[in-house]
Length: 343
Image (cartoon, rainbow, N blue to C red; front, side, top):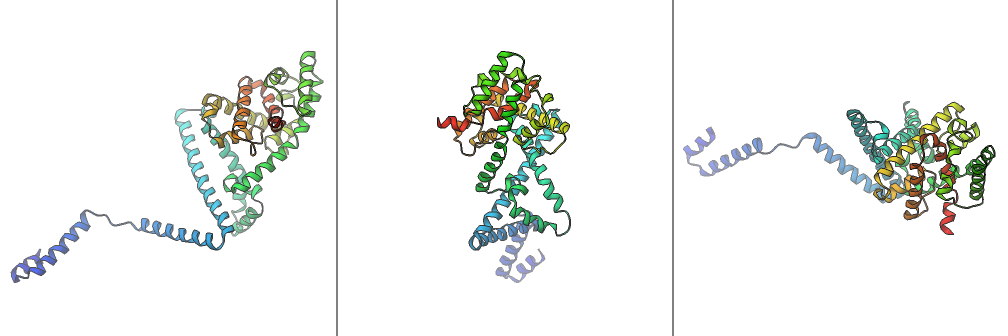
């Protein structure tokens, strides 16, 4: 203002206009516009550099860029899953909910995230010592199926690895069917015995069973010889491999682990029955079928929906005491399903 008065005294109108303009700009900067924070500037700069780095990799090293982009995408997906799981658990704690009271998608999210973290735990532990992370990167590159979780697989790897895992599961289907035939011989009730022998023979000969045939033998799985408490060690080991659980545990732990996982699927089935299969996306339907024993990687969506509908119908008619039948149905319902579609 002193400069303004001086300008008026000397009659220099140009100086007056200049000073007023500077004063107005200063007022505008100090009151109406907040300067950009250093953090936001650094963030924008980092994003710009990262974009240029990715463009460079894509142009010069396309194969490495595929791995890099898959890893970064998987890492972001894992963070999102972790955030979702945290929110679900907070909601459970605030509302006093149990796991089996959750909606289907939240229940499935918790189940899958827990399995992902268990698989990723060894990699995290190995990478703790100094410079060990370089060894981890080498192991992850050469053994992606064993070391990485599904978020870090490329689409091609997902298809390939799911086929490998199902073939490992399929290897014990014959053992399970053979053990069912042996158990059927121990059933004293003749009608039930005959029905079981006929059903298991049909499956071994390549036929796909009817739902009513499986429902008719469920009483054999609520007590001896096929209830959860009566299964022997070889049977539990075979069923553990079907569930993608380690079979290298003492019998007591195998029995508890198997029962826990099959009840988890049973609760998922109840939540899915309430939600409705039609509400699931195509990808969710395929994942649900794969979890329950069917190799859905090469099946059409409609075939998967029909199979899952049959599974949910069976599961909805079983009691907790008949959980063993749900485990064995992974073999009975999926062994010849692909062949039945061709026929």
